[in-house]
Image (cartoon, rainbow over the protein chains, first blue to last red):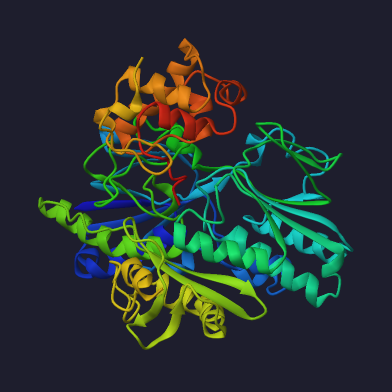
Length: 423
Length: 103
């Protein structure tokens, strides 16, 4: 019997469990393949909703479902903490002392925020005037604080890259502008966006477009700002090179790190707990029968659900190839696809990979769309809202999305050379 | 003294070497001077070499946080050694392409 152990039942782990179960349906029924998923709790959070929750667009209970119910019944679900992966002996040790042996191990334990890594951030003002929104508790506390906010300086700060959903802090700025406008107090609120990057985003064309939008919406951009410490009582955020940003309300995107067990597993991860992973085959560097997917890896792709979805297609094939003794497919190209909420019922859509930056054009059908790329539209916003249904009903069950392939398509995109020629 | 202009180096618009194999220590010293670092101390080299070796081994440059945890130089000292942008400056002097703060 072949044992496949998946660590983590978030977006990536759930998709993998369901895809592999479908691939090996017969073998699972006959007991020739066993698929096990391990997670420390039974609370699956729809993370894109955490951006909307602070603005009252969702209630906390709208975003949570049991993890186990998103995974096929034919898959064994173990609720336990993970102590370590011992690649040398092909085993996973759980916190409760149990040991699981595997033929293939897939690490899908994502990333977690680490506010304790920034001096002073967890001080007296934590979740009073300094908030994160990447956790359900943080987003809910921030909602209450925004409701009571009557004016002052709101600072949004990314402590350090990489972060989950790298566009979410920008979306937060856009939505805050909209929210305070609707409440009729936009003129009493100053919004600043402090980022360690040298622009709004990492890729040039999108960075320009999003930078313009911030300017239009009256958001001050502070670039190359590397947060060193926070004084929540005085309301001051300081950079390592001793610049200061004064705040009445701080929305922080804390440092991100991998799951704690990665650090305890010999050879598995880097210093931040991200799994050392081949960017194209998704095989872990530690050993041939270990793979990683989603936010847990160190590959230079966005940490986003769409990426996990595209990776899953390649990884499912590679698990099968490994078990058959065949060469792996280096098929993952870094493909990411994200809606960017820009407020006032509109959104942008971007589609990119390792090599190709987000470009303007139409998606998914060339010339037809219906969705425009890198351009605000109402349809993109509706797409983002409809995504919540698709997440639970199409994405997690591990189905393909019609018309959208794992690899980036250049059809329908306007290439930089064409753009230059047109100007 | 190495004159960068007399060498046929592949550098981007901001001065980052595009081919790490073109680099040597003399070139590193010349780039440092260009960036306003008059003297490269042992501490400077410790960071630049860590940066370069990590890039050559993993294909990606370490972040400031990783530098602070693993290079043996604290984040505070990194900013004293390389004012403004330690990761970017150390990458430039170490002769590797601009780190992209991966997304």
